[in-house]
Length: 259
Image (cartoon, rainbow, N blue to C red; front, side, top):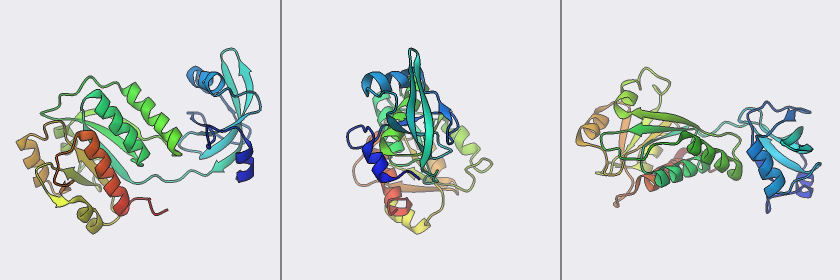
């Protein structure tokens, strides 16, 4: 493990060492090749030079202290020196959010990553009116948020799926043991009470579109055996605000904020 004094003596971004997410395997002595954009960020924005240190993670092998081994015309080469933190298990909560306008969806992805969501699913509903989804942009936002918040992984973001299809396959898929917290703007059990009563079981949180769910969608959701309809308070929240509030409540009730 890396000694704290070693980290303190290396170049940092403000009070924190620069962190970078890469897809390559990490082990002692391994060469790591950042993308061209990442290389430009390290050398042109952060002004790193050969011998400078940073932290690198890939979602599998934990976090590693790396040094800049070479600065080339078309990128940099990093060398993994030693593991700073072992890989940890992320909180077992998924966010399912209806596709909404670009800025709101990007905000929701950013905050869901910061709040520890393990997976983010995009949903289309009867009242979905969102812009065309740029998956590459959302994935880049999730990576940047993970780098900034100290996460050791980046949540997967699933392509948009129809609400009906999602619900049809729930019992047969990997979510069969997962409780679905349906945030209903028309009312329901207080979210904190529902989460506390259920304990540490795996959850998914479903957030609707602008204008809410259609009546037939709401009726079906309330009738399903694996859903819990909850209220997020007396005010009608925007989708991005509702996603942040619901994940915050989940973290406070059964998440990892006590670590």
